[in-house]
Image (cartoon, rainbow, N blue to C red; front, side):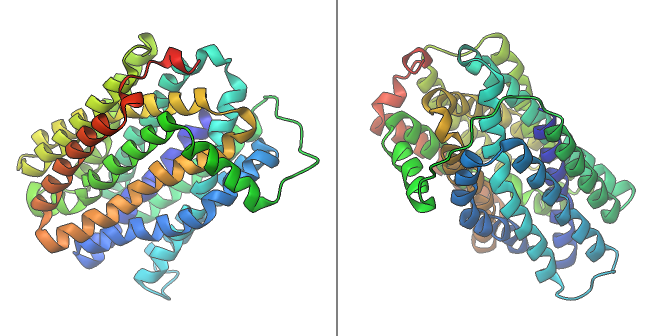
Length: 392
């Protein structure tokens, strides 16, 4: 959990700071969308190979190495923000973000693989809720810290603190004492190994349905990437307000994570997941139509409640359905479905904002998300009728 929260604090702090940095330079929402694209393209390229490596290499060492590499991006951005590095202009910023995309491809698979070695199987449902609390706590404090540091001490300090968090994540992973699977003496060819993981996911209807639902919801409901533009153009707040907006969804998810840790889901888990995704879309519509800062923050808080339910449900399905020797590859595919959709959603939101305007882009995305939940409920009866006890 220390590894997880410190990595989240690092890249979330960078995300808030670099969003403010780029918008300050360009005043163009579309350029905010390009931040997501700069991260997701290398993520897509590296993720399948990352999952394979997590399944065959020592997971602790690989996780510590990835966390150390995560510190490189904020250090590069410190050099750019202070004027030590002037070559490349905006392209240099996007190149630094691309490095984060490569490194993040390893973080989720390492965490999920180690998670399964720490907890007994009967504790996966409750453990996923506790993991969500830690994850969302990082999403609450990371943006808040980033926004506060930008407003109080400037962008270089915010980037520097993010580098420190990444270093702490590496130390946390190295200090972890947990058994690891024996090294595989006979390793399948890398592309055959990747294909085996893909066949498992696409052959499991419930797992595939949950991943696809979450992917499309985040893709079309990614209004939070436009928060710097909303803060400046509509809500008229400074960087501290940006930190609050970025933290509000995670705060809602933490609250629901605490609830689910005490009262784990089992019956009607699939139906609850579908209602949560529909509620997330409705909150995005409300955020887009709101012109008041605290009302907008409230809609984002409620969206975090819905998203927290979705995250816990999807994580539990993945942990219960995946054999241990395939956890790295399945987690990487999960990252391609869900993790990358945040960045693609940011690019989509920025592009739609440029074409339609800020408010119409967010409202349209929320409406599409509600429609996707309804379509999934109709087309995926197994997911709609799911109880967790069916997977245990």
